Image (cartoon, rainbow, N blue to C red; front, side):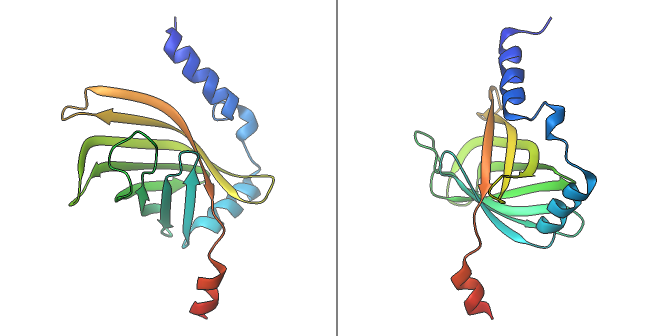
Length: 160
């Protein structure tokens, strides 16, 4: 029998479409999303105001950084490295909240799907697993949603 906490978590995933077959896209749509990300640099913002920039290599390797802007949390306003992988529409990455500037003694992993919004932007809807403390003994699980931001058209113009 599933515990109450797990049942609530699954209900949230279903509500966000992460655990529903409705998330499945036709293969050609998945390919277009994958092609749109491969070899590109994209910037994303979540509902907490955190900003991440991702570079996706041809082999699906993901590198980038994230700046935490969530109210009431530590290590805000400082970039932290992202490492992960994109396979089809599934994106997974890891952040260790420690660098040469600050050490929050925590790590977070995100895993979810990239899909197209009605407005034509990409969104990344995921569950996240956060471990806090030297031994990772305090664990929290949640959901997150990042929206791709439009490229900086001025920068694109300057580059040409």
